[in-house]
Image 1 (cartoon, helix red, strand yellow):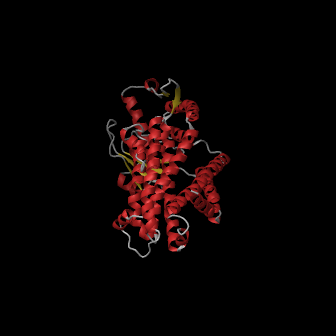
Image 2: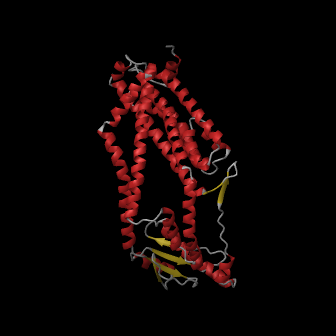
Image 3: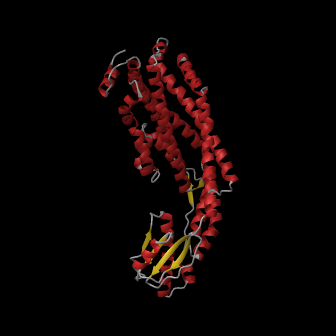
Length: 443
């Protein structure tokens, strides 16, 4: 065990003391806030200097009265459509909007002509204006005034309360938990893949430089593999912790400097701007403050300490499980190009967990598929961290952790049998059949 510890120290210190580690560890957290700062600055400048788009209108229905808005300036043309299209083509205006005679119960045939493909936001803005006008026409036809319509509208917002087995109640928010599960699952997938490939690259480098032949004269190949995996895992965990702290602090500072509001509040205000119904807008503005306060209250109920500890466990467990397999592949090949045929089968279960995160776990975190994805060791690193925010039963979490540890031991045993032969083999054309042969060889 002392020899394994020495190898862990060697792998950890060799990487931490490199200039590249210091540069990436410091620069990456600086890059993200810098990018955010630049984009926010450009966004604010663009919004301040943005000019309204000119839209020419041919309204053959005679039912529309267009008023200029912050985004659009309307010019009504009294021309046939073909002449209007010719006149539009000679201008630099954004679009030509054609409205034929239509039935308000089934409005069809409206067309927007543009010189280039417009964004979905701009098209959606025009559609919203047309929809609001047609709604007003329907109100007039059915003799319904806006005050009556306002009284008919009812907004329901279900307050979510979780009741524990002991009868304790606490509030929750599915949207908040969805975002947290999404973020954690993506981070696990990225880091396990990135640092797993680093192990494989490190093994290949040592094998091709013949350093390994000197090392294995003092330690067993299995000890070397185990020390290398744990050493690089320690570097990865240290780097991740530093990144999260620096990125959180610096990003908050940058957003605060530019006076940018919380994302959910900013999104709510943007939606409100695009709504022309004064009653709906007023109702939304009244609820914004209470919704924000409720969201903050729900966030305070999330056990972030428990989630952080679980994330660290699955980060290490998933990394160690896949790192052993990557180390085995690195010992068998002599270049990254040769390893490509083995990488996809190794990462396939991780990819299944990644897709399962969106298709099953975030949609139904307590469903049977979500349960099995979070229990099977090869998919649980991504699946369980995606579920953990949804208050996973303790027995499921304990079972998943135990199986992940067993999975790491199992993959390490398999990888160790391949590693002990492959690390000293050179000039051999490696295939799955060759790997199976090395695995079956007696010591």
